[in-house]
Length: 244
Image 1 (cartoon, helix red, strand yellow):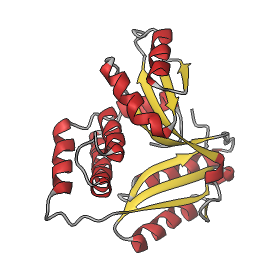
Image 2 (cartoon, rainbow, N blue to C red):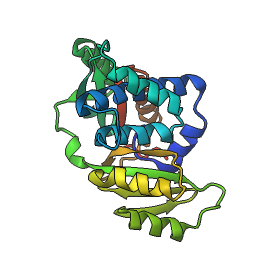
Image 3 (cartoon, helix red, strand yellow):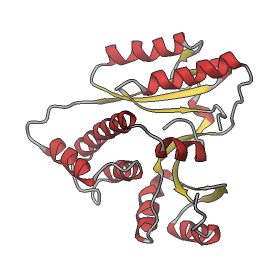
Image 4 (cartoon, rainbow, N blue to C red):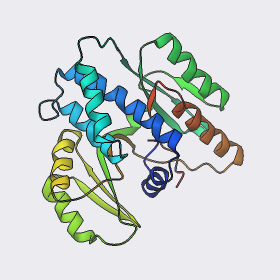
């Protein structure tokens, strides 16, 4: 996921090519392995981090068999996969703030790859903390209402009753935000009410957005996102570019 754009993300998810979908599944599988190992359990009821990743996996239609198989693999005695969470921060073209979250088994491979992407696209990799202060960590759930079958007020009341902090209807996208600590409970309650999500994860949400007017900056910013997302090690790219 990139940035914090509602309908844009829905369209991206709906139109994902098989190759992109496969890459997304691979990255989520890596998150599942880390969640199981760090949480010490393959049961999402006893492992909150795993529950969060499973919600993300279901939102992008990762098959339940894939999820179970990955959990079983992580629990296997012979599994030696070892990934480290690393965060990079910097600026894209036009001063766009960018946060890159990675899971890697080799920092010496990942760091140069991330730096190269910034350099190639007229950006600058900075120190940790240089842009994260301008983002808030929030649980974000997006429901597709393109067909208009859902009553917005009903969804809002269900979301607030479930523990959500805010609700916003933006055309065909219904966006629910909550405290990260409440995310799993909100997701579970809404699922029990029959809702399905086009995206559901804990995101870094920008406090403000930047609009790029120059054609070169727009092309470079999109290229930067693509290069980072194409990296096997990069899990998420958050930014404050208003690209809706």
